[in-house]
Structures are given as structure tokens and as C-alpha cells.
Image 1: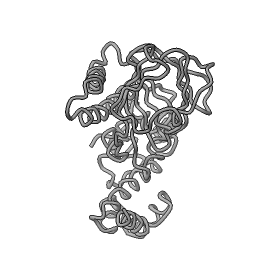
Image 2: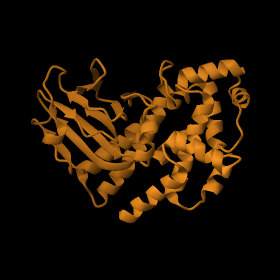
Image 3: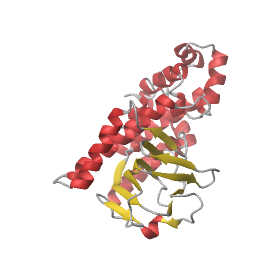
Length: 309
């Protein structure tokens, strides 16, 4: 499985709301419903301004721009940054999926997209590697994303039988394609393992760790995959990813272990051996250090949760 596919499989994004937003005149909203969620929207018509709490400056997005909000921080979206925002949770119906909502008369700016619930166990670690706001130009050669968006808009407008199912499937395709395009255009200064995938050398080492997590990787072996010296690789990896290669590898293994423990089909001994640990004790120690509790307790917690549900 490639790394982007693995990211999406671990997050398990579930399309919670797929809708359109048609606004007019002077308006501003605070999107205050993003904790534990990803929002992916495209400006189909007009333009508006985005700003994120805790991050200075507002960004103008126009027709043809797609934006992804993965940080969970409240976001202000407005016709003008100077307009005082109202809380979206107080203004918009939380059960508006499938609708094109008209706000303040509509007619000036049209957004379409989805809000995704993500798996809380991995969301914090996975999403912190993404910038709080990803902006993607969907014009020119981005024909595939434009096709998905046009199809979604048609489904929301026409509402034929099965429209919501089709729109939700399209929303997943839009999110994946938007992240693909982000990987192609990521800036050299961005930090995080996802951004580092765009680095031709580091990407090879990260792909290797994801494809063979059980291998007894050494710094030298990973540096060889990247075509770099050991010291240059270690320094470059830490600068671009934000942690050491071996720390990253351990995080990757423990996330895989947590996923498999939650499924309850394998024993701890089987999981630890498959991830390259010589003993169950060493695996237990690493799992507790990364995940905050022993694997047996983690597995029991998931079992109790599924029973309660």
C-alpha cells in the first residue's frame, strides 16, 4: 500500500456532510465544528477569505481553488476579513447534508465539498504532519479533480435516486485527489512526514519503511535507500520530518499495531513478531511509550468499547 493510501486507511475518513454553500452580500462565519474532522471544499463561483485562529493573516480563495482544513482549529470564512463572524454551529443546520444552503441571499460565492469524521486514535499524529490550511488550484491541468467536483455539484443539484451515496463516494475521491495535488506542489520549507514524501530522496526511505515495517532497518540502510550518506540523511530527515528516522519508524510500527489490536484477529505475540520485534517484552515497552498504555490494555479497551456500542 502506498503511503497516501495508508494515511487514508488509518484515518478512515467518513463523509459526514456533503453539501453546497451559496452566500451573498457581506457575511462571515466561524467554522467551529472541525475538532477531529477534515474539511475539504472548493470555490465553484466568486471568492472569499479564509483565516485560522492562532495563525496571522487571511488568505483569499477564488473560483477554481480547493482548500483542505485538517488541523481541527476554528476557521473564519468571510466575504471580507473585516466583517464580524457568526458561529456556523449557530447559523447552519448540522443535518444539512445533501443540500445547497443559501446564506444571506446567496448569489456571490458558491462552495461545494464535504466534512469528514476521522479515526480519533490516529488522527492527532497523522494530521499534525499536514499544514493547518492546504490550498490547491484546481484549474488548468487539474482536470480529474474538476471532473469530480462538477459531478458532485450535479448530484447535489439534481438529487436523483442514490444521489447522496454517489456524492459521498465522490467526496472521498476529491479528498484523495486534493492530497495528491498537495504532494506535487508542497513547498521545501514545510515540515512533516507527509510533506517529506515530496522529497525525492526522503520519499524513497519513507516508502521503504511503510512497505517493510518488519525489516530490521538501520540508519545506514535507510540512508542507502535515499542515496545519501548516513549523517546527511539523518540531518535532512530530521529537518524535513521533524523527528529522527528511527523514531518515525517506531511511530509507524505502533500505529500499525494499534490498528491490528483494535481488529482483534491477532495475538500480541503475532503482531510483535510481524513488526520485527525479537521479544514481546520489547514490543510492549515500545507500544506503551508511543501509545500511552500497554498493548493488552489497549486491546481490552477497544473490546469493551465495541461491546458497549
